[in-house]
Amino acid sequence: METVYDWLTVAIFGGLITLFLQRSSADEPKDKMWQYAPAAIGCAVANYLGNHGQEALAWLAIAAIGVYVWYVLKPLEHWKK
Image (tube, rainbow, N blue to C red; front, side):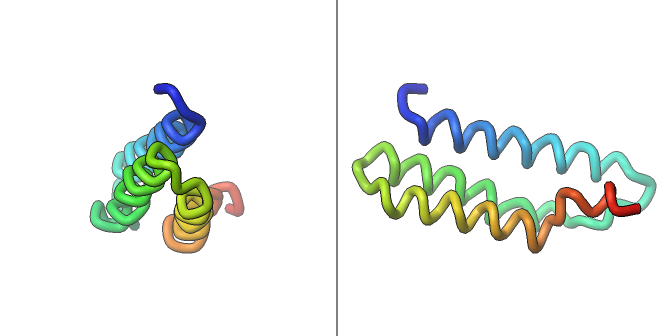
């Protein structure tokens, strides 16, 4: 845990885990487990890119993760009710 990419991707991954655990405890989970895989893999890729000197691609990957989570996993959907 030496770079900003380490901390940021671990924080995003922790948020994914929290969202998954919260939703999987529902009576009828609306998400499938595979829907979390692209964001989790994206965290690993963004961290790798950031740690190997490709900062622009790392930030682009982090932004793509955010867009994916917002539009596919919809983390704030529960609050609208």
